[in-house]
Image 1: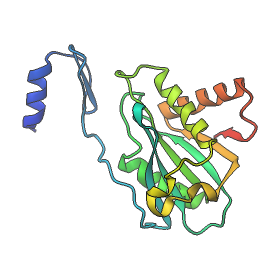
Image 2 (image 1 turned 120 degrees about the vertical axis):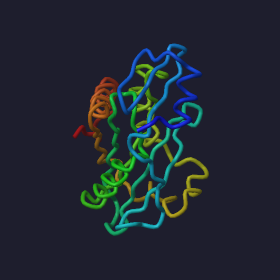
Image 3 (image 1 turned 180 degrees about the vertical axis):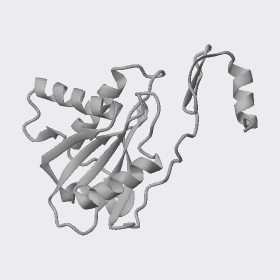
Image 4 (image 1 turned 90 degrees about the vertical axis):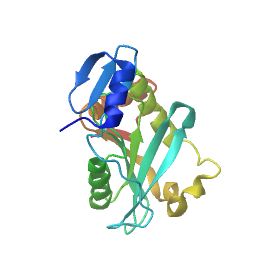
Length: 199
């Protein structure tokens, strides 16, 4: 397959490529990073598709840190909270990827839990421990009182009211598993894990 015109322009503007994972990411000598559309991204849905509603919320806009919240519509609160970190070798991946959106929608329903899927900063632009810092920031954000304007995310505006923050679980795949483990270690060092578990 011939490269797209945009890919040719990118390569010409930033040559040469110094590191590449074919089909996923290219790093150019001038520091430019090109992430290829390996998995389609999908928007959240407030329409409670298949028994779950989802919405994107900002955690730290200045750092680009946000999360996609999945709230099942049928179980009665209070519901456990699963904080999920996506995989991708710390350098690719998104909470908006279709594979994670579909999986976590099903998980929220089958586990009768509110799922918080964290979209953390990626390397190489943001080297470690940036992803770990974002993971910790997301959990601390959960522990704070709702910010003014949270109701602006539509039918999920009251999602915090449905949560049992006495039952918070950290989970992830690949790099996301490493983030969950690191966050749990950091929380344990400051004695904040009495109600947070690693799965």
